[in-house]
Image (tube, rainbow, N blue to C red):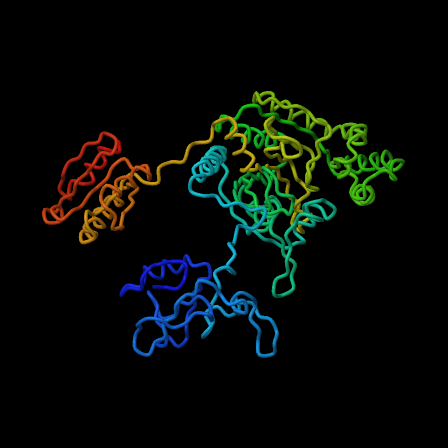
Length: 527
């Protein structure tokens, strides 16, 4: 018997004792370089509690079995950091797997997902695929083709495109250096990278405009909250190569159609115009003139923005009263910009898309010009109520050192869309992971079961092969948990007769069919 708190006997198959030992409060397991000196249940190694453990019981010739004490000596080195010959403390983890050293299981803290990230587990993947596939289908109905760009880019790409003085670049980017000392950043958004890829490859020289759609992870070091994590997923479209109010209407219509396909209600669409570069220059001057008398009461960020990027003053939540009374950008728009925006509004009206003009809407990215828009939902509160937005960015390509190329597009947040869809009861339930469970009555028939599964997969069915040695009734209960509608059972008689039992798990009926007719029998159940 082990001298620990468990009472499992050591047997020829020491797995039982090993399993019991794993429940000992001071259980440790480590590999040995000199494998012939110790024994283990499954592989060369040794099982020990700590250096307090002593030899007990029979073992292979020349080996030294170890047993477990119920308590450790207070001076036991396993309970604290080990020390090197020089006396320096060394953590037990550093010695895992080295000769004659054990790793205390209490040191092995569970590793969780990093803060601000979230695993998408199988039960959630159905809803995610529903959103992503719906957007792909809608975008491609407008003629958009898929594109993928790297998840990290040169930091300068975002500094130029998004704006060096924006919160995204100043505070929210995950930036690192590669081995060559080049500064790289995880992408906080996709428009800059897509523009670099499309215009850099001169795709707009082949056909204009270039229509592309995308979906993928973005990264921002914001405070994690509902609907916004350090890693989040956006989907969107970009239309690059032409300047037309009709294209601005098209991207809004595509987004609106997408939300309609999801059957989301309670949506609000806000639009605005930021004018061209000259208009924004006049507007910046008006903002500086307005804010300068209030400089002393501005927050530190806004004092800096007043000098470097006055448009960002309108993003401030601390000085909301000043934002409310600030000049309107419509007062600075040229006649040309006004006509362009009027045409956009007329196009939205013709498409029966309800839009509200919000003169304070500026978006958080510096590359926007002329039309901008946001879609928000009443179920999302505070600063995170926007499902997404977009607009025109005719000057972006030039900021990246590329030929002047107009563009327009949008980006939508998948996590926020799912929050709303679940609140409205629209998100689909997890789908069954398989159509058919194939199993053998005994392990000896597993090859026959595997052959049946192989044939059914070739016919297009989703098939799970149960390779366990559980009783047949437990295997069939597992089929229910998988959501399978049919089970195929192969026993000794079926192997001999080259047949299988096909059970309808819904109708609770079954029949024995030849292997040649197995696919047809299962297909009848799945119809």
